[in-house]
Image 1 (spheres, one colour):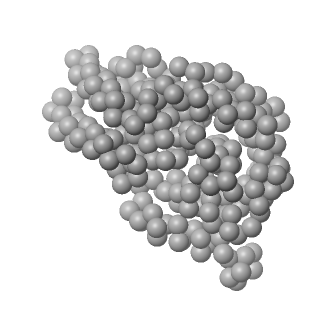
Image 2 (cartoon, rainbow, N blue to C red):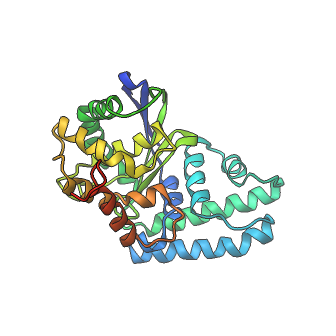
Image 3 (cartoon, rainbow, N blue to C red):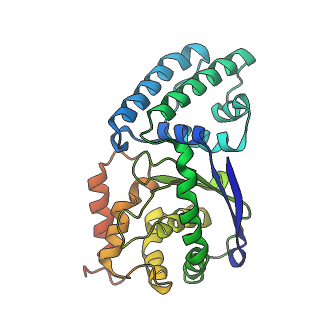
Length: 282
């Protein structure tokens, strides 16, 4: 496990950087199969889900988890070293010791199968952490500060001990914000998918979703792009905002259970971003 703090004094936020292979496996189980880049990994994840869907009702008397449930377990697994503790909290069910042990054993086996299917060992996330952290510490605090100061917030954020959980890039640059557990799960890439949008901006976008959870994730894009120009990270224009909405799957982050196809979601948010304050197309 990698874990160390980064203070953001003005925001009263401290980032705890953390990475564990098993969390990467659970994050893969929280991914939509159509978004998983590796065909082998996609098949492994699908098989694991199918097995659990068949076994969990028999072993524990409850239905198989959905994407949001897997997301919760990925975060809980980073906080609780005992599998049975995290699984008991995750399922929220009154399971007996034998039931918990059976589910925990299945999870450990599935996690290892998924880790083995990764094209690259998640242990190498250490190599991805350092450059991202250096870039964040250089520009990130000022970036967040600028967004907060120019946003309509009734209260300033007070997010002490905010956890940043780095996971293997199953989907080529995904992740999510978990306000309930004050955690961001972030797929760590080796390089920027597009040099016009440094990964520091994507990380800031997820952290901002902890600041004001009721606000749609997509609503943070325009103020974030404006702040990015302020700290010389990107250009502030409609093209950059549209690119961010597409690369970051903005509407999917806001509505992970949506049945709307990704392309349709990108078009929807692009249309929204093309409307100025007067309500007329640009």
